[in-house]
Image (tube, rainbow, N blue to C red; front, side, top):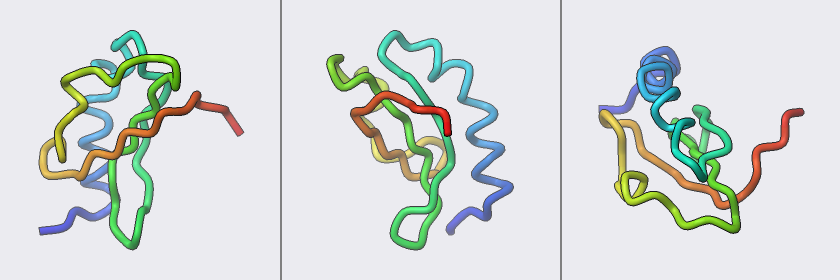
Length: 73
């Protein structure tokens, strides 16, 4: 079952502090990818991806890891 945006944002809220506390993580957010909501985690491009982020989902929300620095817009 796919999540709606509010459900996806709740997953983000529950995990955001823990994810951002990881040394190489630079950003966390819910994004729309190929018509579905995902939890995107940005990781410093010069760092290794933390083992905990090498999984397909968090609480049923697909997890996408991007190697890039978060740039506020």
